Length: 137
Image 1 (cartoon, rainbow, N blue to C red):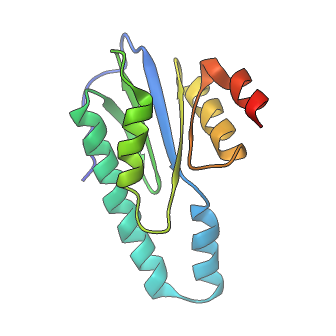
Image 2 (cartoon, one colour; image 1 turned 60 degrees about the vertical axis):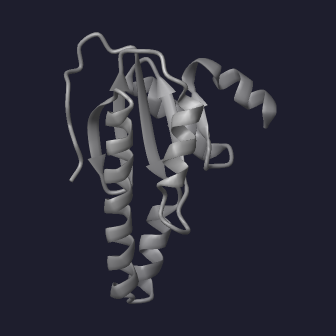
């Protein structure tokens, strides 16, 4: 079960986390009529997002969304998002990677997430540093 705590007042940063290419894996299982693998993937993603949610809560985050292959949370204190992302990667199911975006609003976190997914996946991008990521590409 995903854990939801806290309110949205006074938020400093948001993190948006999403599985990479999960939709393609799901489509593949549908097209190959492989219900067993679809169910395995569903259960693995549920367990993983719940573990990620718990990890974030344990680090002081307030979880806003936890479903399918994604988690969104906020925090009012400064944290090392790179370290948090390393922990998230450890919790990923076999064969699945996650990308993440960080910003000072849900919109910024989502834009940073899209940047991470568009620039290699399996990485963390911060909205305030998006120009730096473009220079690396």
